[in-house]
Image (cartoon, rainbow, N blue to C red; front, side):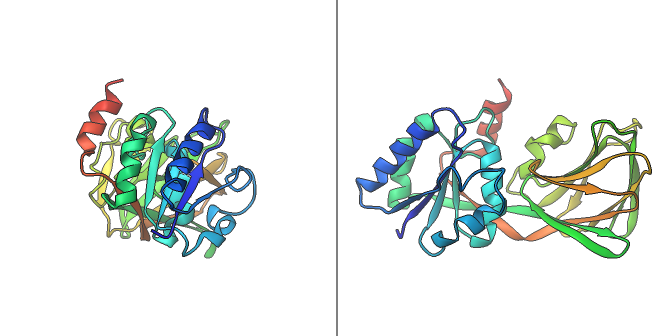
Length: 283
């Protein structure tokens, strides 16, 4: 093993103690470990993790991310192009992306050391914003692309097509376009279905629709979704994984489809999605 890249959420309680335990474990066994400093993981600083940690390239075989789902989502977006597996250690609450809890850490770190793990590839989404024929921005997401109204806005209407075939004019608070991984996030809260993350498909879920006929729709991963903003008075924003935001205008078109990039998440054979689902949803 060339080395391990450790990406903590330093703002989480007890993160420093967990980082110390992980570093001690691998250093005592002669494995190089690189740890991202607080200024490198600062959300408010400019640039991506990939840019700040570029000197890690070709020096690590696995990323260990210590935090909640938000920390893992950020690492997944910023570092997906590296094609390095990510192991999430949960310091949050209902973490669906983290493979293990802190209490299980020592046993599973031993599995990492001996190579007793596999990784699962998760599909991502890519979104492009077009304004009067001009590309305004491109985004990728592991969980979801959300188009929603601002805090003081009126009803938002999104005219939606799939492969140029009209689907629906969604009027309400917005629309969530989610991956199977993101089906247990915001989409679930909005009434969308729970999808096994090993599948490849796209879930379209309206947010507080103003029609009882509007329901979640599932599209194949090969299809292209277009949503056209139809509102002159509403503030509208696009968010990727709830972390990257872009302001939209009336008439903007947002094209969403499966990304060529995928995320590799470390998986141990004794952890199963349906068992995790039961544990997380029963609380």
